[in-house]
Image (cartoon, rainbow, N blue to C red; front, side, top):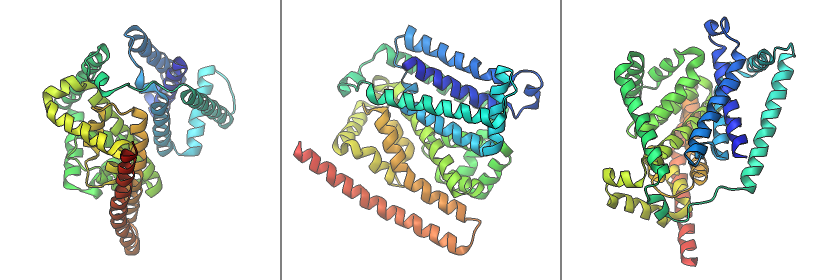
Length: 377
């Protein structure tokens, strides 16, 4: 089923690339955009054959939980870019162009969505019946293996490409400098106008901004959450902020995994990592949920820290999603109220205060439950 899962990811990314390409008149006039789907699917599958089969590495990035997360994020982005009815039209046109038919656009789109939904359910059942084996101990994860060496090389090259692009590509340099300045100044209105200046590409730009700030702990994410809610309404803004924050957390997690414990011990010192291990061991399965519920704990540091432990990525994502959701909803409600009445703004501020109080209360309950479990053991 691994091949089927990889192929599903290739199709999803291919559809995403094709639907974005429909916004380019230059591309529409020169190529059949439907061919983006098989082309990208083949590229993804070839990457799997090289990395997963030839190097005998774990193709972890395309496990079911990551596949589901990718589907949700790309779906939200496409809905925000196109809206429902235009999305059906473009989706149907993409498939129709690929098969050179004259099928009804909406019906074709619904059939495709139904097929993808059924495919996803099959992958979910397979993931439930054949779970990926868990690491036996933290010691196994701390060893330098071929996988950790390859992961380290890929991670370093990725980080070097980000840094080199900042100095070599003027547009990229301007984008990063402007975004960082707006986030540091906590200028919600200016950030909203900046995202809105990209037009239909605004949701995608917002996602890239959220992922980028995840790499840099000092940059505040709540400002971007406010701006998303201000632009797209609190519910769509919350969906966009939550899903893109999840992607950012996953990226930080995999960067830590790519660097690996042996290399990290040379950078951070083994002592600091041992303290972090002790913290995760003390609070157990509730560690991520507890830390995500606290608004004053760095989102990014938790993601990096979790990547250096032997926690399973499924548990990490589920705990992150649950812990991050309350704050995202409250901040989005605040952002959506900025252009409304004073009463709405007052209610939003009360919501922030309640979030902090409830987070501390829930944290206390979870820690007591963990302590009782340890006593029982």
